[in-house]
Image 1 (cartoon, helix red, strand yellow):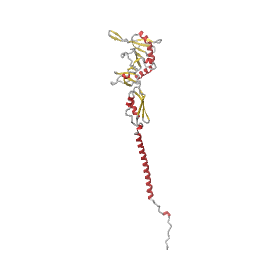
Image 2 (cartoon, helix red, strand yellow):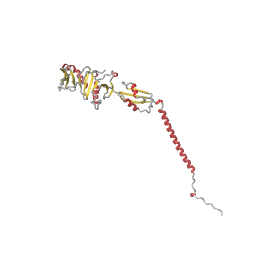
Image 3 (cartoon, rainbow, N blue to C red):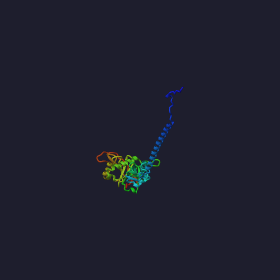
Length: 312
């Protein structure tokens, strides 16, 4: 009997497995990953090389520094403060540290440092303005409106026409004294008000701000101490200039004049000598201002007075 072939049941057929194809997919994924890593590495290397080339490019190294705004400080002195800035890369140099070096100079109140591509640094200086010659301990120093010592006064500042200012230092503590900003501001307000009247300002030779509420002034060629208080400086000083001749007719030798009050002038005569010893007249004289009321006399301390000589 011949054999009969049974029909094949596809439900029981073994699936065809192709492991070679699966290995090929893994290889392709690995190859793609390698290509991505290579591209990223190439981009990173190219960026690094470009950065190196830019940072080392001679065209971007600081080769020129301009200085503006300096009057007392020479340009060479300003450049000496920022020595080492040249040949640095203009894109990466930290400008704040170089500005701090400029501010270390007592003459420099403020400074601006900025880049100008491709290789220039611009420096703009604002210098401190001396308002007077402060007498500190045994020396003379230029001081600004806040009482900051700028420099020691010397022949190189002979062109400055400034008054001498006493009393800027506060009472010593621990063997040292500090400049009092309140006293310096009083002197600055007085000098600032007198700038509107240069004819009066030119007469002022010496200022004493030992009392921060009472500025005492001495004029060129006049040993009289004028107490002006802490306001109305121009009006009070002008009043003394106007009434000075009349005052000397009544009090020939005047030690001080107190101009702080509205109704009267308080005049203190100089000390009188008797028997080889000086005897100070402390009573003073009270003189009425024209068409104004009466008041009590006051006196002023003259122990530190000296003949003023205006610095020119």
